[in-house]
Image 1 (cartoon, rainbow, N blue to C red):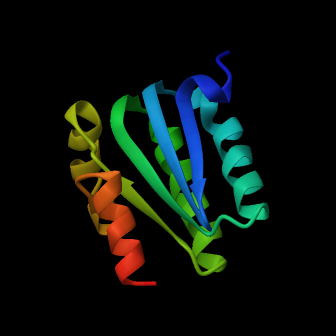
Image 2 (image 1 turned 45 degrees about the vertical axis):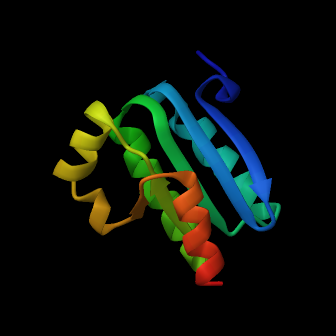
Length: 119
């Protein structure tokens, strides 16, 4: 099994966590991803910007985990913003109507600007 560092990169700006998913994010990563996000929430990150620009595939189990994580952050007054879905990820994103669940932006830069304007 791959470790979490192989499928995501993280950086923090204040109380915003920027998470870049990389490559294929499959079902085996479900629990490590939930633990990762829960740890960041416990560390005070209330809002996440998830960059999908380098993501080739996300399993349905991971999408489900992201919905669970969204509930956790909204309970803390935060949110999850998605950026740059493309290819197969964008196709599933649209078919499953995740654009109705998550605010979606063309880039991390645009998402961060949105957060700054609405702080």
